[in-house]
Image 1 (cartoon, each protein chain N blue to C red):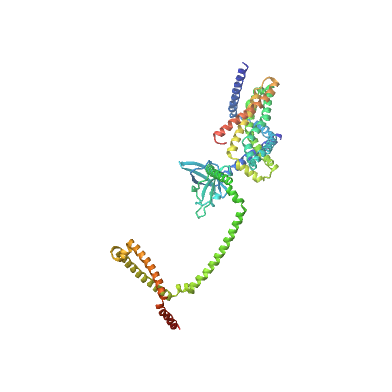
Image 2 (cartoon, chains in turn brown, purple; image 1 turned 90 degrees about the horizontal axis):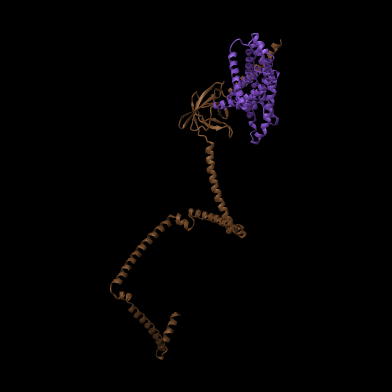
Amino acid sequence: MEKTKNYIKLGLFVTIGTVLLVLALYLIGSKKNLFSETIKVNTLFRNIGGLLPGNNVRFAGINVGTIQNVKIVNDTTVLVTMIIEKDSKKFIRKNSVTDIGSDGLMGNKLINISASSSESSIIEENDTLLSLKSVGTDEMMHTLSNTNMNVYDISTDLKAIMKRINNNSVLWNLLSDTTLARKVRTSMENVEQTTKHASELSANMEGILKDIHDGKGAAGKLIGDKAVADDLANSIANLKAASDTAKLALHHMHEFMRDLNITPGPLGVLARDTAMANDLKSTIHNLDRSSSLLQEDLKAVQSNFLLRKYFKNKIKAEKDSVK
Amino acid sequence: MFKKNRYKDFLKETGEISAFAGRFFKEGFKPRYEFAELIRQCFIIGYQSLPLVCVTAFIMGLVLTVQSRPTLEEFGAESYLPAMVAISVIREIGPVITALICAGKIGSSIGAELGSMRVTEQIDAMEVSGTNPFKYLVVTRILACTLMLPLLVIVGDTISLYASYIGVNLKGVVSWHLYYTQVFDTIDFSDLIPAFIKSYFFGFVIGLIGCYKGYNSKKGTEGVGLAANSAVVVSSLLIFILDLIAVQIADLMGLT
């Protein structure tokens, strides 16, 4: 009796132990899709960045499978074979793209499958999905290093600029000058007024232009009236004729002057001979003097008793004629 | 001279244990099989060790969780607590602690039992009566140890993980569903299978050393104590050595 009891107890223990073991194996296996129906899908990468068989495959952030195998095809291609649950298959299209991500910042690598916007049929066994080049930590670090260098350069320049600004008393005076601010404000007020005037002016101009357009005023007539335009055209034609005549006259004048220069005529001599010019000058001077003397003499003659009567009569006759 | 003798004794004992193991395989596979005695031993070794293993596993799971929390909190990785504890328990702590507990309880009891049987010449009497004492006493005990220890380890792991769940919820709130998902998301076959296989070896070593020490005990009643003592010491040491070998093999096979 006791023996049977012990057997039962042992049987219970063994059963519990075995069940726990089987349960643990099943639970682990179910996570690795060992007991569910699956399909195989491939994808190609240039660099898988440490992806291992057994890593998860996610679609829309949900685990839908695992990596079965990773194989180098050639020097630039790595073939990754994924096992995807059949239940999730219907959501994944042939034009879906894969990329390598990680579970958290430092977590295990995994493959993300992302849906494309365009239409396509559902994936089948052994289909190959397109892949995106993922940004690796190394690449990120490299870019970050470049950025750091740039930031360093910029900060050095900024430091130098700030130093120069601090050492520059002119700028500080400029900044601390209150009168400048007042002047600037006045200038701004002036600018405001000027723009106001400009606005008024442009309004006036608009009015004027409107009047001109309507044919009002001289300018309007000038532009709008056909008769004025004809007159103007005539005037311009006349002006042209006059300018032609003037041009001809100038031409003749030019020829005349040339002749004057070339031919040994009296006028040419008169024009060029400086000695004669001086003589002429002194002659004219003498003539001027002589004429003034003559005037004086004539005044003396007028006052002479012999001729006085004649002049008196003449003045009288002139007065009478005026009356 | 003394040192030389010690080396010689060590080598002699290693050779004798190996021969003892060889004899186990030789006698074990030969009929007639002592099923009734095997099951009795399984009951004693497996079932009767269960309370001790469960209590130890529960405490280990709880303590490990509570003690790991502050360190993980420092890194802000508190959410990794279930995963970390599960990996530690399944891979290492579960099998080794259970094996050590069993080495203490089972190894010493086998050593003392067989030792006293040897001293009181019961083994010789069995030989005379035509019963193969090796088959009846040794093979059944070693086999029972080998078979029962992995089961004890599995039960112990389960208890530890439940204790860890309690430990996680002492200072935080993690639902059972989330805890279980995190644990089984982390654990892989490469964690469970090597640990399960090595626990067979641990069981084998506990049974082998206990039986060897008891079966070959001398010097009267003093020898019984000595056999029990050395059975625990040697089997505990061998458990660690086996663990070292197991981790290297697992590493070579890419299972770490």
